[in-house]
Image (tube, rainbow, N blue to C red; front, side, top):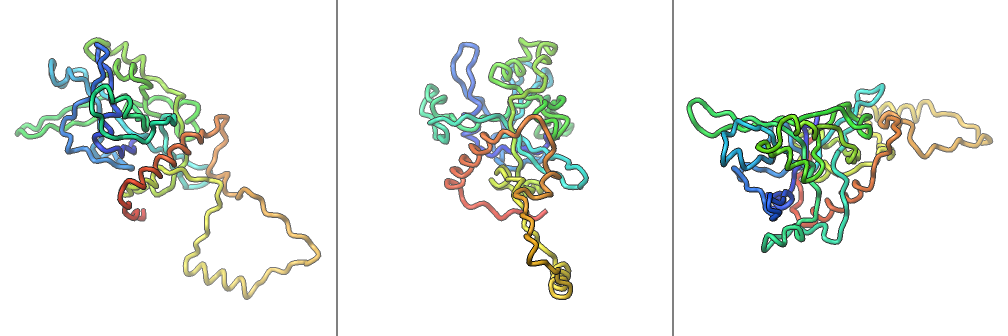
Length: 306
């Protein structure tokens, strides 16, 4: 689970989204290592490169192999709900609740460190606790970095979708403690590993099922109560035509027809009962945010068929 994520921000915007304060309380930005390897995507698979935060100590004072705690960054992650009595799996996008402010949508360049907080007020990135490793080829060459996201039992709000979820670090203090292996012991850091209810989600289109599809449609919320359009195959169309002409259904004109229900009968297959309602506020904000970015970006490629 949580192997498929979205992290589509440009590199500079992603850097500003990770702004933090050092021990002296001064605002700072993280420094990239191999920045050219970062590829923004709405649909990242486990085989793709993803941005990960590490402590500066790994590169300044101690061998890279010690500590090994990291924070995996993403807009959010995808999870698939297994529907009862069917092979269908409904994808969901899961992320931090978002707050709309007057400055949201501004990801312009900052002229000075004092402007970072004023400039960055956009999507809140999901920060997931992880551990990493670094493999050095025996014959020499570039090191290979890999990471694993730590998972915990799912919170009550997500339990209907999946029984596991990533260990989410909620807030700058939790992120700092997890990364600070020099001052925070492993036993103390493990207290940060637990489920969180500060999470929201919405259903998305099956277009995300194919990892080659990299468009804003992967994140866009869909309404599961909207009746799907039936598309018949060639043989099915012939059968329907035959049924319409050869065996018409007789109706009694005196008998009033029964009104069709507003909610399609198949919708119960896709929604399981849960005492925790889906939070739609974040989904509506996401739709407005994607619409704004779509106006600023070139036309996306046509999605691949699965």
